[in-house]
Image: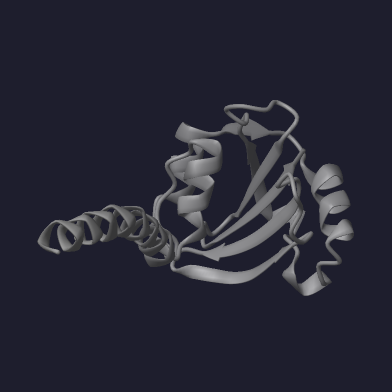
Length: 152
């Protein structure tokens, strides 16, 4: 019987390893809480941590992960957000038309949309699919970051 018991212990231990691994990964992602981490994973941009998400919406779950996402993040005055965007991303002259199209699709209320006259726009190429689009708009005070993503 001792041999049978040790076999069950070994199998139980082997089954516990994948469960612990999955739980560890989930804790890392849930613990990060800041959408900046998701931007870093999706777009390979190193942005400063935000003070929190003020508004978020997306087009819903899809089988292939495509769709649109929109987040408004709050930043402290001294976060260095605009300087970081200048180093990490590519300035874009005007993102108003494509961003407005995405925000219209998501039915974002007017009070949650960026004031384009008060924002500088940036973009970045997706590391694996050039069809995907990212628009980052930062207000002149550097205290709001509007993250608009479109995945294909």
